[in-house]
Image 1 (tube, helix red, strand yellow):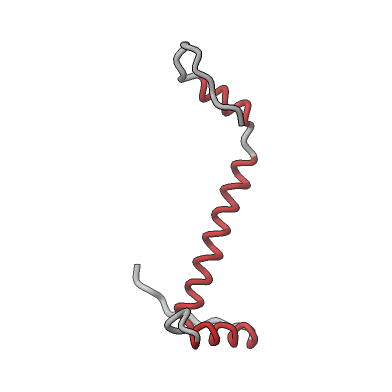
Image 2: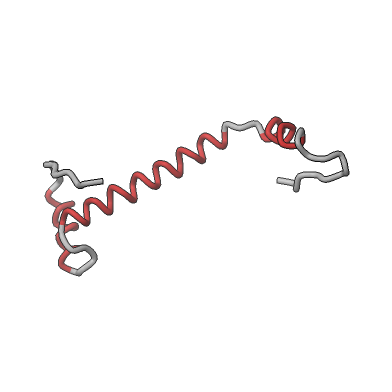
Length: 80
């Protein structure tokens, strides 16, 4: 997907930290540093969202649903 150019407003101290990372060679420029930070934040958000959704599952109900397709030869799910 092509990149889009945007304008943002950012705290001066935060910008100094970003500039320091760029000067240390952690990123080629401000844009790449900010893009990497946004990607990392979105990845964490999506991961925690998945975890929150998984916590809503009823493990006993999910186990019963899974066992419907197991053969009747004594195979059991491992203990959680």
